[in-house]
Image 1 (cartoon, one colour):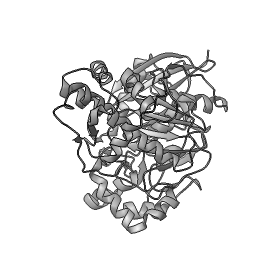
Image 2 (cartoon, rainbow, N blue to C red; image 1 turned 45 degrees about the vertical axis):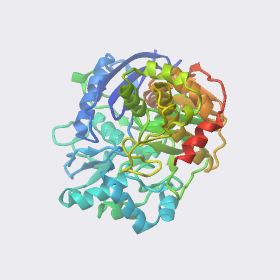
Image 3 (cartoon, one colour; image 1 turned 135 degrees about the vertical axis):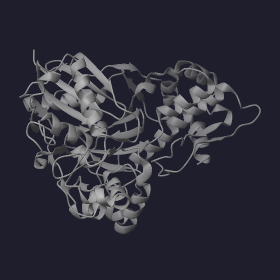
Image 4 (cartoon, rainbow, N blue to C red; image 1 turned 30 degrees about the vertical axis):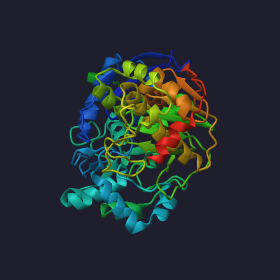
Length: 471
């Protein structure tokens, strides 16, 4: 039996799955947590990845591995391969002004044309600009720039600062199309870095990871046997987290993936690149050679955490309460910008509750308004993706919250295309395993996925009409 491994180094944790190459069946898995915060020492990711690998029983019997990771995170290295400062994560909004500065200097239309996207605070380029302005001495030391999965792949292959097997060979850094497309200085249409934009952001040039194709291997693992990682395992190219999830789901044209996790995302696989000058849709590349127009929101599952805590219930009880209320929550509308927002681009916004009367101020209405507000923000994202030429035939609803009966039911009332809910799984890690198999065999596997539900399509226009009226 030939085995392949997929790794998801996400914001909150690292997950590892081991799959059978022939069937795609998951045979073992492991996980380890990451520290909280919006800036993290990358060494913590490395330690968590090794711990998660060990929890699976190790990679001794594995033939190939690939790493998917959170997009945009800024890992800056000096000439000796040392991490200069903790990595700024996608959800660190201190670079919001830097994004505005870049847009003012270059122009939104130029940025969209040259990179497929108009940058917001999450993009790597804006974080580099923040570093240049806020910590100029640190910025001056930057010799190379990597993203989270780039750095982990590099380390897994034995590169790094003094003391690692092969040392600081910065030219050995690699990445893939999907993660490169989230930097703000790579062009998905041409497949080339835009070094002028990099220098506009950072103030000088730097070594950037070599962009590999979907079926290419970055190299092979170096000896980490003390952590159950032998040398010589094929290492796939890796991916950004959303592109990894699309691979894991087997998403194709006509599929729109709506993911409810720490952030909310709406994305589709398309054959042509997109360039939205409004900045609502990021024109990313996917991990399979196509494109991935994507809308992201900062506020997603934590909306439900917050309102469930306010009501003193768990998520199951929150869902039960929500289904007691009528569609539209008797006029109660939650605009759920609890931590600012990325789409729309309002980093300093706060949440607002509208429509409370003596009659409407009930626990069921508040519970339902939380779910409706969450889903309306994502439905706005679906409309924005449509405006880029996507014709959706179904919504694949994923993330832990998708398994809540009320969330799935109300999704069938908010979205105007059929909704399907795949079984809960680690789709980013599963997609990374697809990459590992692809790098090993040269052929992309077509492993099946299973559905847990198909909520009834029962569009209730009042829900989105009320939400839009409060915008």
